[in-house]
Structure formats: structure tokens, C-alpha cells
Image (cartoon, rainbow, N blue to C red; front, top):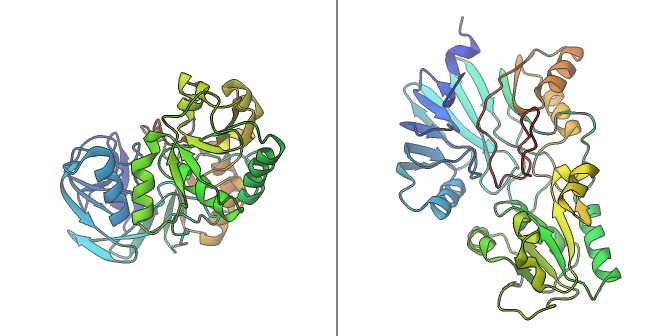
Length: 348
């Protein structure tokens, strides 16, 4: 009888597939890697070969250069690649552009490594696809009942309302360069904001990549070369570090905002000096995590990088077998919602 550990097992390098001799989202350079998405805690350079969606490969090339790996193998959603008798298929994860779940099948056993995922609609990427499996490997970033994120439209509505209330003030929105910035822009467009949105230079290349992939961001302009007290009543999107930097002083009495799932924690918003916290997450909240487990009802759930204990307890109470993997290394500087390790306060 094949055990799940025969197909995938945690190692210091990341999840390893012994029969296929490859890793999923390895944290160190390896010969063969399957990469679920482009955030740098999951997508690192220096591997021999990388299998990922075409969009993720494009993101890695944009961030690391054309030679980020010796070989690249684009794998569109739904296509199956086989290596040493192990089938690998990528299914949408709903996290950011090109994000995928790795569906690994061997000798009748199917395991799904979800990477990072969310269940709500995102106008910038394909929606999460539930995949029947024997073992589901889930993140647990927001794996506590206290984390229930409000509707995105409500949070964007609060931003638009503030723009109406304070037309003399620039609104600086902290949003991470890959995924969150583009999503905030698209949500603003859907909320009726059709004016030019100004962006920090660190976002421009990825914005162009998203537009090449068919995501219409509307009129954008660089937030550079402006006089003092500029852009009253306008929206400026920038990396979170920039809104607390001297760079932000050029704008007219700025309202500082930050789009993150962690903004539901008032102490986090106060700590960062955020005037307008926007609870917009690219990760599943507690309700979405547990609903996914109920929908799939796999033989086992493996839980990793986040609040494993709460979800393991929930699974036990609901008749599901679960274990914590405690993988380390998934704490990227520009993935705003990677969970802090116990006893530390990770940058959002």
C-alpha cells in the first residue's frame, strides 16, 4: 500500500517527490522544481529546471532575469506533464496571476500542493479550482476563526468614500508589487474610479506584465517628477515601505492606506501608522479554508506555513485527519500576508 509520504515528504529544501525526483517550491536551488507562483518565497532563482505556468515563468524572468534557471518548462493549466512515472498537473489557485496548485499523481494516489490560495473572485487571475484528491496540502496564513475578511468591494468603497471626503489630500495606498497592487487597481476600476492612478516606479514593470497578459489596468502614470503637495484627491499606489519613507512627503497631506489581510488587526494598523486600513487579502481566510476542507474532504489534510494548530483542531472536530508540516522559509518580503513565525513580528 502506497503511503502519502512515499509520494511527497517535507525536507529542509521543501516538499520533495522521491519517485519523480523533484521539489515543489524549494527554498534552495535544486535540479528540478515545480513552482506554484511568482512570490519570491516560493519562486527562487538558481534551479536546474523549473516547471510552472507560463505566467509564473514570465514573472520569474521579470524579477530575476532571463537566466533564472537553466531550463524552463511552461505548463498551462490543465496540461499533464510526466516525469519518471509521476504525473504533474497545474490547477488555478486564485492567489496572483499564474498561481497554481500542483496536482501530483502516482500509482493511484493524488496529492494537491495548493501553494498560496484564496477562494474569492479576483479580477486579475484565474479563480481557485477545487481538485478531488487523497491528500490536500494547505497553507494556513489566516488559520484562526478571528480572520474573516470583509468583501473586497466594501473595502475599496471605503477608499473611494475617503477620496470624496478629503479631495484636497493625496491617498497613498501601500500594496505589494506582485498581485496586490494590480488587484487594488482593478478593484478601483470596478468601483467606478476611472481617473489616472499614479504608481511608484517599483510597480511599473509588473503592471506592464499584467497588461500584456490581458489585465486592463486603465490609465496609469508615474508618481515621479512632481512638485511639492502634489496629487491632492488622487490615488497613488506604492510598496508599503515607500508610504512610510521620505518619498511620500512630496504629496499633499497624504492619507496613508495599506491593503493587507493583516489590516483586520487594529494593532498592526496602529503600529504602521496607517490611517486607512484596507482588509484586502490574497490568502484564504478562516471561512474559506474550512469551506475548502469540507468541499474536498480528502483522506488527509497537511497544513503548512501559518496557523497550523487551529486548523488541525478544526479538522479533528469535523472528522478529518490533519497534520502540521511546519515547513520553513516561506516568509517573503513582498508577500504581504506570509504569517509571522511564533514570537516574531514579520513585515507584512
